[in-house]
Length: 465
Image (cartoon, rainbow, N blue to C red; front, side, top):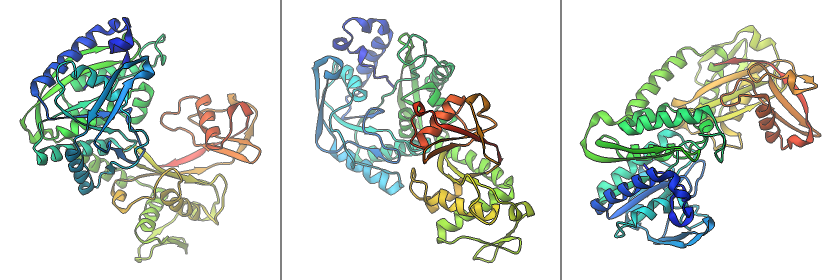
């Protein structure tokens, strides 16, 4: 586990690197440990390699070049040879496991600084290796761990002697005078992650919520999870070498040596077991609004069919039915159906005002749209249904307001309008903490610049979980 600030490259820092001398000394120690292992291949997982929301990119071809020219040190250059056999083996494992990864979609073949900074130190002591470089993705923590498991199996099948370098800085918000400012979550992230990684308690990596990590502005968490997956079921000897945050960005260095099998360290299996228990509890607490949304999504995903509302019930093709309360049959209102998978939004579509004869029909219509027509996501797959979590918002009347002072992010949703453009954001969303942020997101969704002074409206919702 290493950081990647170009500052610590002497030719870039030009003396400024001495403010993080402890990190440099630890880096050299790690590089010497790697040299002593004489690996045939070094795998680097880098946040600054090519990144997609739904796909892990593994660099293709025979090799790549790069330099620190963009940081004013073009004389520090690299020409790395890729381990094509191991890349093929990893791709084979990901395909078998259903992990969305491969060598497609390369936009820029040149080496990124998240890869070059670690290699800068390694090359001071050892050069007889091949490289595998892969990026992170917007997929869930679970998928990053599963990628690590695929790496482990591929390495075992090829018999390679491999070192995996998880490249990633910690929080970028440790100081008011730092390049990214300060957030309390930054200090908390660095404290927690160094405790987790220093003890190699990798199962706790799943406990860091997406919203918390976003506020901390870290860039290495998913990289560390891939490494954890590559060490799945493996006892390790862990050593924490250093942590610094003097530049306003956290730099942590730890290393791990495998020490045989340990079935008690299969962290994904444990996490998924906890998830199943949690989901069972959630399913048991669903009200009729959420039951209707869930069963509609499941039916449409499996059979491309929808329930019909008749005689006070939602009727399904298999003969089952849901008795609906009068409020869902006699009332008309806009609704939003939201889908979450592995702690991440998986789809959300809704209507501001009623478009169907009743709330029940509105929910059915928007549930189908949420699972199949949200332009931000691919259609929901049948294999995802067992882990999906649902919520339904029923909107109250929309009222125009004259100023942002009449908004409250916890109580009111907002609609921003300009000409024919309109963007909406629901209230009480994770990660949306103030009115300015709420308006900015709603404007962005509607293609409106905040400088255009959009008209504002607000509404309340009843949220069903």
